[in-house]
Length: 83
Image (cartoon, rainbow, N blue to C red):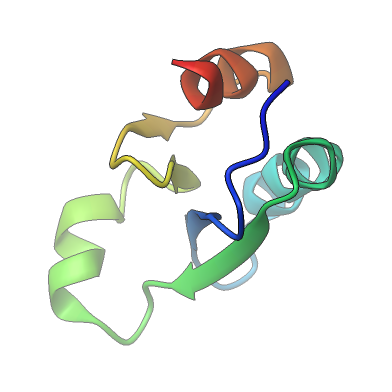
């Protein structure tokens, strides 16, 4: 396991998104394990983000720009972080 020294995972979410809550629950142990932060971006008031992610949220973006839409597993995200 490597630490990425203050890197952050971004999660794109929306209002009343129960899948987003599930995704964050999966991410919390991973960000702790990898020594990372989590940035939550609510797409509701941003037309560009809403157009890009509206039907796919939750979507995570790793520090190197990889994206993965729901559904995903902790193992998938760990592999993305390790690549």
